[in-house]
Image (cartoon, rainbow, N blue to C red; front, side):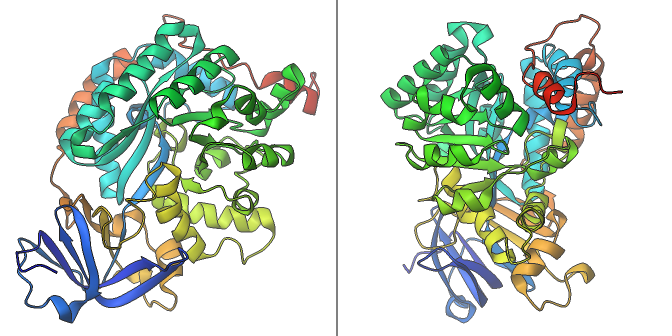
Length: 464
């Protein structure tokens, strides 16, 4: 510890830490010292009583933990929260979301990103992986509001080569942006909207430029069934044969990953990770969820996500953490899986690894970026505390986050957002809603065709 004033000292808190095997633990009556945007030390509170600091935060009654990471979302889609409810996946896409998205302007994307970043900062999210359109606007919002992001410009093969080229150009131009808070990826939409030639070209670009790939694949079991029916291979096998698995890749959802996919993923030359967003799977009544246990057994990290608020209705990663633990217990038929400590591991270090930032984020340890949230556990719904991990996962809520810090900068203090004006965003977004939601033009940005034949085959074409 040097003699110069620290940037920030958080004192008197309980700190969530990881041991040398990555397991979660807690240090009580502790302090976190931040200097130059980095955690300098996690030590006893008594050791920093007289340490000079530009800012001090009293953390008594609170847990300091790594900021949550939303490993897969479409942040601007908060503008569509609640507009497509109680629909099967195909109707959700074709009848509402893709017609509405044909109206999107860069201003809509910007305002949606502002509202989304405000929601995530208030919920303890310090980094998000975004996969959407007009991403220059999202990057500008990220730079301004102080959050961290892993961004990719999405594209379909129906756009022609220009879509892929725009995704590459965005990734190269914004890589390392916002003082290093922005990382980037190539972002083909999915194997059912991006053909093999485009996926192969994307894999080559990823290797050439040292970029990861972020895409949807095997989102649900119907997609896997249709891919097998039409092409004789699963979506994961498509990723292998096109070379995507030779690059570092983040796969969104993966609830359709099957037993035959596991050896494919295990032998992948690139770093493979999966993002799970369980609330949306429940809403769409998908019959399976992300096979976290099987993926763990082959060494693939699974990060937590929300997907977009048009399907999930929120960007609450805290809820994703609790749901992941509960759904995995039900799926496995075993109350010992996932434990609360395992859920916290997925929410912190595994999520950092999933977005390629496992060496800089995910744990509060010397040399890691100071992305920190303080969680207040003094409320009646979190008392008494018998098992701190269980309290955090199953009793605490996102609104218990009092303070959110990214790179040592306080973005929310005592629930007050410091870098975003939510009322102004809501007003302007509201004025734009009629034009955004108009579907009278009959256009769609894409067609979702992966569902019906598998459903009819499974349940019969003439269901009464």
